[in-house]
Length: 117
Image 1 (cartoon, rainbow, N blue to C red):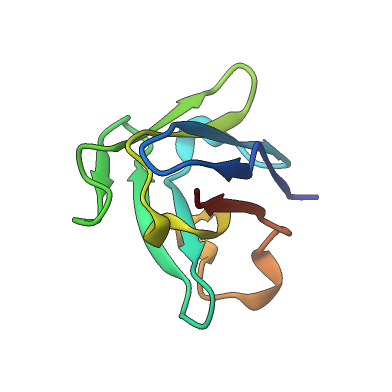
Image 2: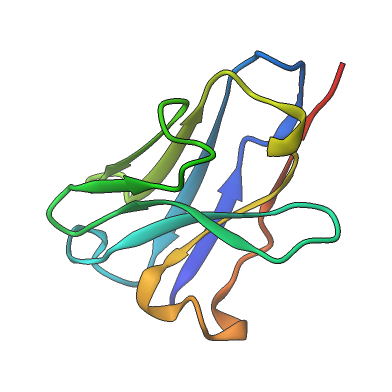
């Protein structure tokens, strides 16, 4: 069975850094395109970073240069290192397989990130 467990969220001051992690199981991470998503209060969930099966990455403009997505195919984890955090980065952060993002039962619980003074 596929499992996605996000962790590492918390309260951080503007300009600070935080790393969130996604522990995966039940599928070959090395052959799977993975995304990090966030859902801000009152807004739709949005894709913010992707790491493809070959290792290439892609970021949405709002996080480009500040966030880094990476994976460890031995530990089966996908991390998102966040720096220069802004209040608008506040939200619930999720990881998911890109090909399953349209399936409502594919999502984990996410981890909450709050950026505030």
